[in-house]
Amino acid sequence: MTIAVVSEPALPRYAALLAALARHDRTPRDVRVLVVGARTLPPLISLLIAADTRDLALWNLPDAAAFPLHQAIFGADAVIDLLGAFSAEFRETSPLTIITPDDAGTAPSAIAGILGAAARNPLVTCDIDVYRTAAVALAAAHRGGPLSPHRARAVATAVGDAVLAMLDPTPRPPGIQRAADA
Image (tube, rainbow, N blue to C red; front, top):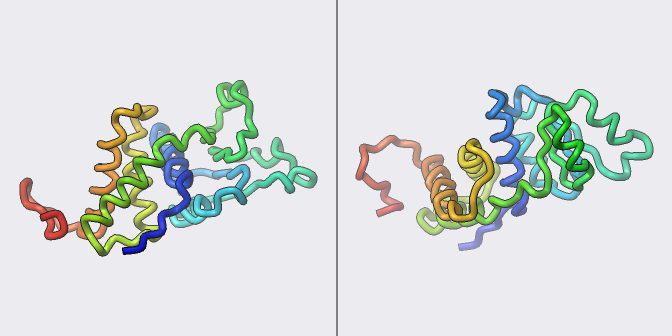
């Protein structure tokens, strides 16, 4: 079995955005998202597009001469900063939701969850629907705030279960396993 897994940092950053927006009762469809350093993580852009992000703006360092970053953030509700372009002081005082490089800490759980699901069901393919499902499961784990390292296995299991449920959404009574789990 050959599985190609999406770039490791894309899933947790997308999940961190979903979780941050959910804390404010918002979704990607409700906001303008600016991705700073978009060229560094193309799979993230695919996830944002697949999530029907209402307004997606991309900014890269070469854009700075014609379109400085302080102008690019105008009107944004959320910023995914892949370059670490914003100071800690700015992040703390800004009304924007800012996702930083530090928000990729759940990547091992996401990958472990997807691979665990693939080991339990040969129908798992690493496509945009699987990535989006994994990110939503990660976001649910994020909603209570930052994840602690000791929860990694539980988060990986939640991701794997979500991916398997996406493939076979048939509800079952408690204790009845899917054929792939038996």
